[in-house]
Length: 123
Image 1: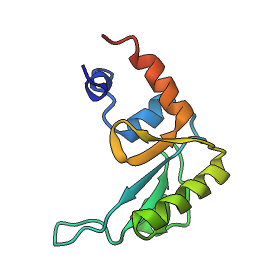
Image 2: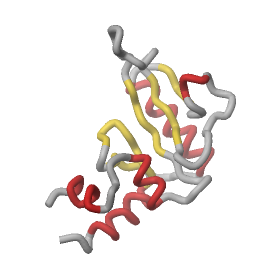
Image 3: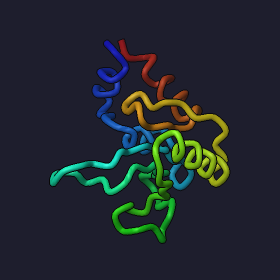
Image 4: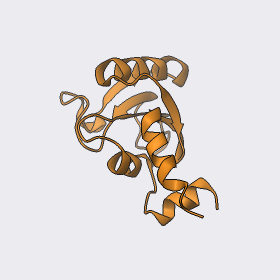
């Protein structure tokens, strides 16, 4: 059974679920990158990296379309390092790792460690 299947048995589908279950409320955040969506069905307005949390707004004064998340506009090579640096400084995260549910998202190493400790017991 792969990691995503093991997480699904715990009803963990995405980064939001991981932070809700293994993160500290009001403290832990994730950083994700989204590309601009072209066409009528697209929802993304620009390429950007965002710092988000399921428990609090990381930027209460953000544009309504950012849903309270701190945003850094630009391509991934430009915006992701800025977002990671800001989140690290603001929330005290020193080490980021790729989230197992989304390759464009980074989570704190200690959140992943807590998750992996739980997953170890699943055959």
